[in-house]
Amino acid sequence: MEQKKYYDLSEELQKRILEDRKNGVQNPYKTKDEDAIRRRQNWDRNKLLRPAYVRDCEKIMHTPFYNRYADKTQVFSFYKNDDITRRALHVQLVSRISRNIGNLLGLNVDLIEAIALGHDIGHTPFGHAGERYLSECLQEHTGRYFNHNVHSVHVLDGILKRNISLQTLDGILCHNGEFAMQEYRPVPIQGFSEFDKKYEQCYVDEDNVGTLVPYTLEACVVRICDMIAYLGKDRQDAQKAKLIQDDSIFSEQAFGKSNPEIINNLIVNIVENSYGKDCIEMDPVYFQAIKETKKENYKKIYFNEALEENYNSQIQPMIHLIYEKMLKDLREENTSSVIYTHHINYIAENAKAYGENDYLEKTEKNQIVVDYIASMTDDYFVDLFAYLFPDSKYHVEYIPYFDE
Image (cartoon, rainbow, N blue to C red; front, side, top):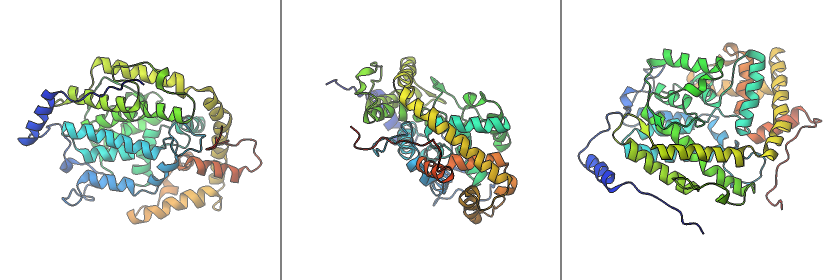
């Protein structure tokens, strides 16, 4: 059995951190609760009882879409196996890893938690494949693009209008863990007017999402931890799904190759290279190791032919069919249709407490369809498709628990 390697913070840095805490030294780059910016600044004021970013955490957790994390798959969508990661676990892992780093660096861990809890709330059913297919539909009809990080902002700030802080929304918008960097250096923005332009550009420029940079250190931490949370966990899940036998097929990297090694050792390296700085860094060796690990995951897990075939042959046409049916019902104002009874009315009911009830009137019809499909869990989507198209040749075959 291979010997795992788990590094620890250097004695020098441990001593420095403990001395700084003893002497009350504050990280000058920490985001302050009293500096939270909101669209309705007089609402949700920072208080001792409920600090600004604690409010954001609670607002996100109490949104009607937060529950749906539990049945949105991460990578492996066709398995009846509760040991395989769903998004509910993923966001918790991102939050936990991020707060570990944030606490050691003296950052605002409430802001970190808010960004982490909300970062995937706009994700589609069926993971990134669902995201691609929904973007195809939107692009075909409007020329605009769908990205889950952008849609997460839309859910909290557009559909539900929860008055979430700019700091949290910007961290959610810029969280995309697909783009690895050795250094994450915040880029300040001047309020919501600049943020709104940054957000809108992602809908009209396909490449813009890859250029986003957060404006707080806390958001930079979440962004790198989004990647840390799935690099090794996807390998564990691939074993549980029997796509691979064990992690022996992966190369040994500077931080190891198993999930616990990757998490532990990346935390150590990031803290060692970032403490007291105005950016989040890792050393060049670890940065190269992340790139190699991602490359191996894509080759040996994500591009699995059987998974891709299921996505392309079943999920893609199913999403397109549901999209066209929902759009038709909206254009014909069929108020007894599912998109009215299960989405538009649902949004209206949840908007009452905030005095907002103009979703249908102010939202373009294609966007309403996108909002509905993106909100669905995997099982909801499958059941809805069977309800709308009972005689269709398309369907999802789940691999059962006791499949030999």
